[in-house]
Length: 272
Image: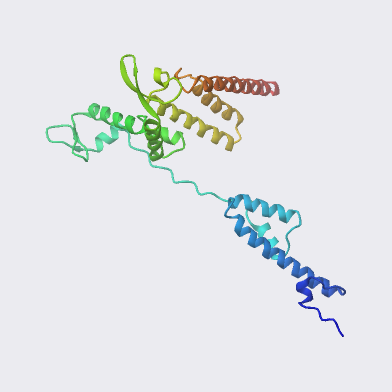
């Protein structure tokens, strides 16, 4: 009685003998491997960024794990994914320009779109600066937000979060002031709710400078920006910033960054 094998030899992976059979088996295995990788790629894409996954596919191709049309497609794909840069936000007009653009008011002065009348430019500038200070923690929101790599909306949001989250009112020098909760808050030894966002803005600007310096591979600019950030956190602008421990850690970073800049300057001088 003849033995009957169930299933296709190709599907069972048991083709042996001729070169034609071996070639057919190889093609089948490559096709299965490509299909499997495509299926896995769809699942991995949900867990990691396209850029990271693309790099892994290219490495697999370099290691000889891919073949056929799938390998060609992977090798032809770009190494890095292009990111769309956000459109540059149009800066607000200067205080003087904003005042001159306003409509004339009956009886003199200027009137804004809400009907508020300002007797002269000085009165308008004073009111406008107070508004920006309250909303953005700076009188130059366009300039400072751009320097921090933010939009004005993001700057305002960061300011609101800083001034309304985890704050408490304490008595300081005979007056009630709002301070950030934390060590020493009861004694008024932390930054007030108006001082904190100003510090946050400076740190954001330093972080943006660090980011740009790293992108440009400018180590001196990077270290100067890191030094600026460390000095702020160490209490350069206000002795009550952070906590005693955070200031101590920052002072260590200040010393390190100064040493880096000094050593690199000496090294560059020796090369001259």
